[in-house]
Length: 449
Image (cartoon, rainbow, N blue to C red; front, side, top):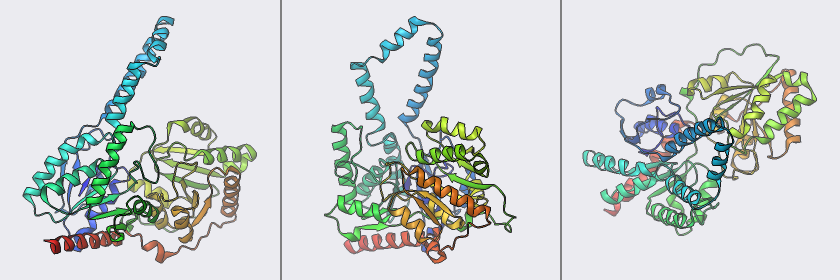
């Protein structure tokens, strides 16, 4: 199992592979994990490692990530500019000259694209992972190679190992890999390198035994991109929730006069404009009503929202908690009144299905989702828990917030969860689906031999 993100790294993508490691052992599969050392990872949750069965081997390798070099360089450059600013107009003139476009700036942009966007900054992990993978294959009787991305450069490791060892491999796309001819063409890439990336993806996907996507929409996009591949080569296994992760729920306390809402996870640029504008408009129109609610934000927040968040914090409407351990996050979700999903703006495709939605479903809390028609809207509505507001509709969002506040004040917010539907996203059931895919891949490989 090749994955760039794995505990103690606590990014959301780490949970998918971790849960497969936890539950695949119940289906006669023994995972062997290949992942980089978590050196320099900004957020870790060592407690996640306690979920690993004792016989699951984890092999960690050295890694080089130019994106981290870029971050350090940006910090150094910012400090240098501050020092120069204190030296007066002469330094300011030199800074202006250094910003002038020219051959040097174009060269810098080319090097940055080469190191971080071709296809991603983690491409330098490939040789370290490849040689450790060869060592693993020499020591173990491996039946199937499985790789989960992003970063999509990791799929190159699976491809090379499978070719060398003549093993079948399975590609698991937690997010789409956009190239030329995909559902969306990536912007800002060097054309020649994008053509090379497109060719590489074509080779890797066509040689895979199975291609797994996390939503039906993303699977249909892949089928459209690869019409020459049979439908049997594709599978959809969504993300999910593990009921063992959720804390024990105490008897329901008396209803608080203040409505608590929570958003757990990264708030990306362009995804939350409507939400923050609606909160500010609500606060301006009715201060008493605004004081009857508090919004908790867990995780990273795009820099562009810093001023809006700071203003709402000062007004007592928003409280920022930063990154939190998984257990803490789930506990806060359970103690909230409403959970929020932000997919505003025009960034997300209808096929996108965020992983946080499934743990929200299991909490049984009403879900306020800012999202267009698509996978998420259908999921939220079918669960019986959903309130869906279309993107770029601040008025509709303000009205929805007013209704939620009125229901809460009246002791309501009652929803009727579709329990049988929600249970289909249990991690144990999803691991059984993956085991079925792996069984089929192995049987096909044996038949060919």
